[in-house]
Image 1 (tube, rainbow, N blue to C red):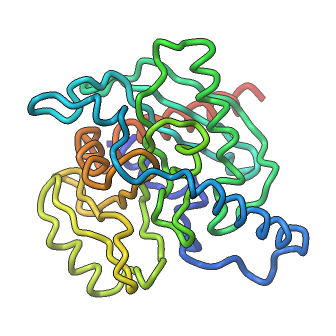
Image 2 (cartoon, rainbow, N blue to C red; image 1 turned 90 degrees about the vertical axis):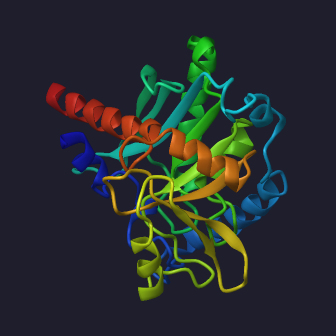
Amino acid sequence: KKDEAEVEECSTCADDTDTEGEEAGDDLSPAVKAKMHTWEREQERLKSQLEEVDSKEVISWRGLSDPFEHMSYIAGADISFEKENPNHACTMLAILSFPDLQVVHLSQATVVMTEPYVPGFLAFREVDFLLDRLRAVRTTCPQYVPQAVLVDGNGVLHPRGFGLASHLGVLSGIPCIGVGKKLYHVDGLEKSPEHMAKIRTLSKKGDFFDLVGASGQLWGRALRTSDSAQNPVYVSVGHKFSLETATKLVIACSVKRIPEPIRQADIQSREFLRKEKQKK
C-alpha cells in the first residue's frame, strides 16, 4: 500500500498542480514572457509533425487477437523534485517488460532545471532531460530501447494541443502517450458537477468517457485503470497513437491507478533522491 500512496501524492510534476489549466500570469518576468513567444512558435512548428493515428510501428505490434502481441518493452517517464530545492530533480526512465510489467532497466540522472515552470510550457523545462535518458538507453543498453513511452504529463490535452508527451514523441520519434493525474482545464473542460457525475459512472477497470470540449473537439479520455481506484487518469494521444489504441495500452499497463511504467518511474526516482540525500 505504501508505494501506491506515494504515487498518489502530487509532488513530482508541476504539470499536475492546480495551476495546470491556468494561463501564465502577469507576474512573469519580461525575459520569460519573451521566451513564451519563442516557445509558442516552436510548439506550432513541432505540432506540424504530430501523428494522431497508429503508426507503422504500432500497427506492427498487432497479432490476430492481441493488439500488442509483438510488443516487448515499454517505458515510463517521470521527474521527481527535491523538496528542499525544487530546481534539483531526478529524471527517470523506467523500462518494463511487456506484458508482465517487470522492471528490466532504469536510466536516471540528477539534473538542475534551467527553465522556470510556466503553465502550458512544461516541455521546455523537462523534455531535454527525458531525451537524454532515451539517448543513454540507446547508447548503453540498446536491447532495452522501449517501443513506447507513457509520460507523466499530457499529450494533445493541452491549450495548443502539444503537451509534454507530444513534444517528447515528436523529438524522439518513439510512440508516446500522455497520462495525467489531474484534468487539464482547456476548452471548457473542468471538474464540474457534471464531470464528477461521469466519474461516478466508471464502475470497473477499463471504463472511460470521452473528454469533449466546448468546441466539440475530442481531447482525450477519463479512464478508470483499477477496480480499486475510483479516481480516473486522463489519457491523451502523445504521438504515433490513436486514442483508441492509447487507451487499450494504458489499460494493459495498469495494475493500480497509475499505469505501472509511470508508477515505477515515480517510485524509483523518489528512491534515488532519498539515497542521494543520505550521502550528503
